[in-house]
Image 1 (cartoon, protein in one colour):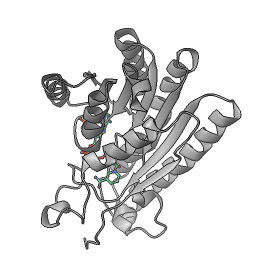
Image 2 (cartoon, rainbow, N blue to C red):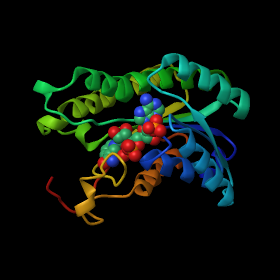
Image 3 (tube, rainbow, N blue to C red):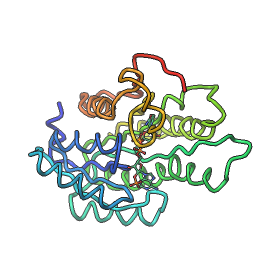
Image 4 (cartoon, rainbow, N blue to C red):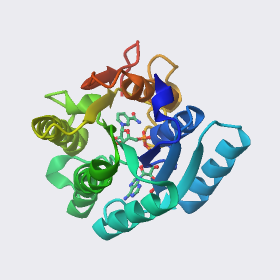
Length: 248
Ligand SMILES: NC(=O)c1ccc[n+]([C@@H]2O[C@H](COP(=O)([O-])OP(=O)(O)OC[C@H]3O[C@@H](n4cnc5c(N)ncnc54)[C@H](OP(=O)(O)O)[C@@H]3O)[C@@H](O)[C@H]2O)c1
């Protein structure tokens, strides 16, 4: 079922580490042309090279981009179209989670989190749909949310992060409804991980065992599953949690 996506262009944001890196490698292995976006150019170059050396069916091409800058996003989507062709898949994965109690939070950090976890999703989605609409017979948007986007009583230090992921879930439902109403063949899936071993969770996961956290590759598997599903099926929401409990 993944064969229909071979040679199609997938944009993955936040591909320089963790879940985004794993998704980029997985989609390239399955034969897609992956535009990998992040700010750290050295990481993107290493990813590009490693995927090439792995003999993957597809490829990764890195693009430095700060997704919180609308002009960066617009410019990078134009460049991707020119280099690789029209976009068929967008994975909105870039995210940050600086933790602080809401009552004494540094508002500059709060703004960065809102800009990265929400506003950047809006600008990348807008740019991707503009590329998909005229050219793509079929498109797919994957929004990487979180289990914290479903919890109603998160700890205070994770309160704003949880609010951004709740917002992302609502925006996803609304965008999907709009695409359906307009009969545009672009599917939209949210994937909500529990604790995943990555740079974001370093410090929490160090004293835990596999099973109290999952791996970035496990999330990439779910993304691939949603994309590979038949074109008449929209996998709307996937939650991926560790099998065991843990305490912070
Ligand atoms: N780890 C978990 O337990 C967990 C659980 C649930 C959901 N999630 C979600 O999964 C997604 C990925 O997280 P992760 O765990 O893989 O974290 P990570 O390893 O810290 O990766 C975050 C990625 O986002 C990129 N990024 C951050 N700000 C950016 C910006 N302004 N412009 C472009 N790229 C930016 C980073 O790249 P650069 O720094 O190079 O720009 C990096 O590639 C996030 O949306 C997160 O909320 C994570």
